[in-house]
Image (cartoon, rainbow, N blue to C red; front, side, top):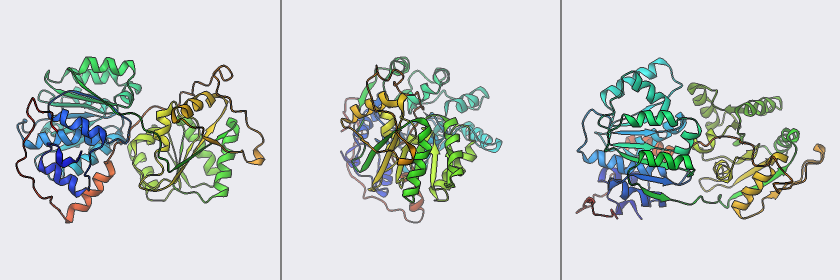
Length: 441
């Protein structure tokens, strides 16, 4: 379906036209009409399917059409991390470029007092769309900075990630302050029991939309090294000695391991930086700027980057440890081979990770090539994926899920480019809005 075939208003379509977004992704095609028809939604789809646009576009369209309270908070979008909140805010700026009457504010922790004061002012003035992390929004609510009584839209983005991070009680506290008739939209990459329970609690007769987890892009050259834990740094040293590698992300599920890896890489004179939850927001911003601008060649990171950050020119992804499940693997290696580029994904598989890696191969329906270890490192363990032979191999519990949402940086870039050149799309005539009985197609 083309965006032109939806009932999004002309100002939204103008922005999409400027950004060269023509075709809906499957999640957008299924969700946009249902949201415009005021249905609660539970969407199950992996990151990168365009979920941000799937909820932002119809909400912004309805807000721009009018009929909602002025100088009031009309929409709350909950995000598990500040990085994702920033990215949603960037998408908001792009999609809402022609919406003069719709305001927004991003609310998240890790900032100085000035930022908090700015958030407080925007919240009290009634920004139409508030994009927030649970803890920070709850802090503002307790300080009396937020009036939730007129909220019409409540969005939970990456709901499974928020529950994994322990935000369940915060979400319920926030939800208790919302009007009974609020339209609730929940997106999750997975549907475990705890997500189903949350949906039953918050959503009213929801429409369920499921998009299957896709396989990694064929352009990604996947391989693995079966090794002992102590051999991993030696493999990295070998990889960097055989190629002048730049634009590399090394993933580990634990922040302490990230720090150790970065320390070892610096000893090898590898130009690297690290990203994990112990960094302040200012430090995170500086790390991402250095890596994106090419000042640093290698980024060592926890899974916060696997879904939360858009970087288009990554040449190689190294999984220092095996991700917790197949979906996390797909998210991690999906950082490379983007924007029509080729990419390489290498995974280090030690004894305790063999079963988990075998499950990933089963999901991918193919065996991933096993590279021989460098000669100077000696022999590695035998690759055995049978659970009985590998009793601890259920996976290593690495990492929690975090988000990348489609169109984030693209929306920002397009908005910046349009500052000097507003290119309006030809207006449609005779457009009608969906009624209660319309399917919105």
